[in-house]
Image (cartoon, rainbow, N blue to C red):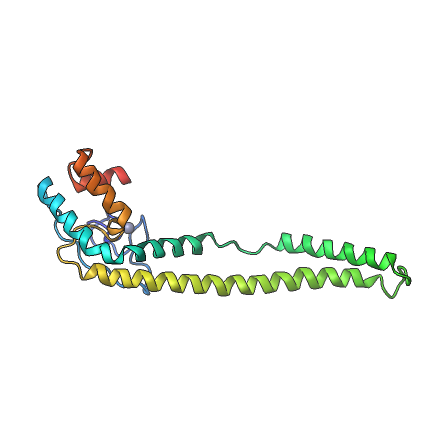
Length: 195
Ligand SMILES: [Zn+2]
């Protein structure tokens, strides 16, 4: 059995792909069954050109989906250390300002730099954490939406023997190029080389 998303070989009857996790997300539209891969290289070439044409109108969506997933995975979590250091800097600044002011540093004002540190560090961290979660959620939702649109288009393809990831424009071009230049003889060759 082959994973419908990434093409990895799976144990028969397995629900979730060990390579890409396909089948573990209930929010994603399930992928249609794969058709038989044409064994004859010429027929395979023809079929690939047909599929390339079928997927051409949604080409840009593949790029959008990849960009969105990439962004979602590279989104940096706010760092408590950075905020603590930022707070320390603000505290030093506050302390310097007090030092320079007429009142000077006395018992009433000496607690202020400390307070500044706590407010900047804890407040800044909490706010950026909140923003991070909200932005990440928004990006994840957008990526999910685009991927599901593509999955619907994919599922409507006639006799599609390519796993979902191989229908992305770059993968499809590579496959067709490989067949034309003779570096690969079959889809199996390509799949094995990719792993
Ligand atoms: Zn997979």
